[in-house]
Amino acid sequence: MRVTAKHSVRVALVNDYEIVLAGIARMLEPFPQIRIVDMAAQREPIRVADVALFDTYSHRGLGLDRVKQLIGDPRVGATAIYTFHPRTDAVRAALDVGADGVLAKALTSRQLSEALVRLAQGERVIELAEGRLKTEADWPGRSDRLTYKESELLSMLATGATNRQLAHALFISENTVKTRLRLLFSKLGVTNRTQAAAFSIGHEGFTTQRISD
Image (cartoon, rainbow, N blue to C red):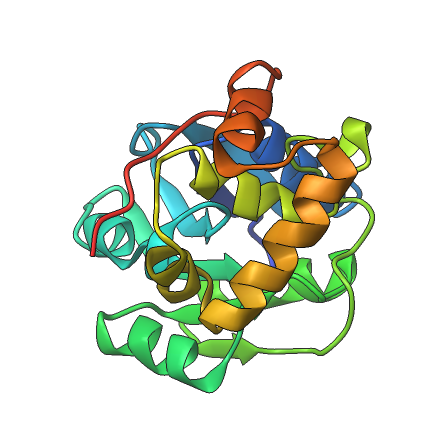
């Protein structure tokens, strides 16, 4: 059913981290036109949804394999990617696999809710507002003073990924990876990748995923 102004939009939130999904749900809570019907952490949605919002946190190359699964799911209407990396090449890759929308994490809560309504009404929506991640969001390690970028890098580092794999996963250069790793090690008080990975394994909220070429 294509949603009209008289209907609330049923949204399934998808990511491997419950804390990430809880942050998005909190952002959307003030908007009655949005109804969260599923929070699919480490699984596919099990409820019918007008829009599946896939958060790319910790997923290599926007997690496009996961996006393809959502697109092919008969319980899901539109599929949108919610990302902190809305580069042109990333957007093109998302649209090429059939995503209906790409939404930047710099959007305000209201902008995000409005974009979800438009997606449910059948529009293709690309919203790439520049800016910082909104504070209503949440991520693993935030209570340990890790920034979003540091948290995402650490979650991938624990998989044993090389700098090249990390760069590809995050749409950044290998030199940028090296710089961010130095800053991350300094903040954690560690000197190498093994010690940093041990930090994530020993802290609540982090899970590990395999990153392949």
